[in-house]
Length: 345
Image 1 (tube, rainbow, N blue to C red):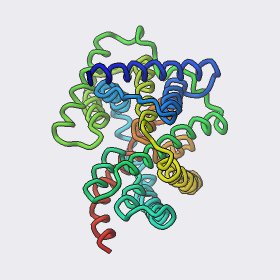
Image 2 (image 1 turned 120 degrees about the vertical axis):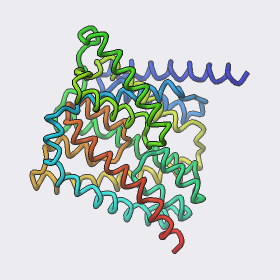
Image 3 (image 1 turned 180 degrees about the vertical axis):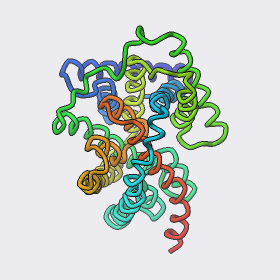
Image 4 (image 1 turned 90 degrees about the vertical axis):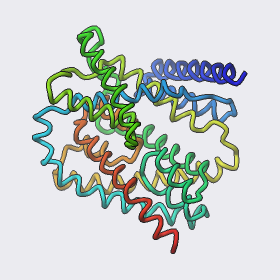
């Protein structure tokens, strides 16, 4: 009975996501296959409908984002990596400033407990912050809604800025058609995505579904075995499932949670936008990197979501991913250490 109910919820979720994507396409809104499912699932979830995520299928589709980044790692890009080192030095300051702003906001303005306040303020991966926050005695539901709101706001805001300010056409295919990619290359990319994910999961690597395929595919790309990026159809499918995952985070949210947790997430997102703007102005003012790459690198959204937007926008994936990866590494390694000292005080 439970399995049948779960299947029906997933079918309903897929149907609503497809409807949302279609509406966004008809209205010619940016990133219809990402934002359409996300908004549709969000609105229906807030209305009280019990949706369900796509589980392992959704996770597997994320592996192709890692494959897309890994296949962009060529000997020339490795040679150019030292050129972005100066820009990377801003990331620790970026993370520290976000934490210094976020903790007082959650603790003293929204009156969350210390553990929830601390891990809500950390711009890390959703799953990692939930695990750390739970171990520290925080409110897991509040953490989930706050971080989901952060990702939602940033993912929705970025395309509007890219189209409104830069005038980018985000409706262009994010790659060549599958018919123009050799079948053996597609098979290699699927295998790299699956096995990279499974191996990374076995060794306990954070962000296994993206980083595992990224590392394995990068090795195959540098060795000349993989010579193509995932075709447009695969990237579109990955967008679709990521949109569902973000929107479905709001299933079961109550009015009280909307007033407190989601409002706190919105306030936090506004503050993040201001901090990101300061770093954007500083780094572009120093001419350390092109405007588009800096903009996408210093938006603390979800790793998968930012990779999708970078692919669609035609940004330098190595630059963007290296900054987000450093941000996540710093948060995961240092947040528990800082938390022990801060929460004890």
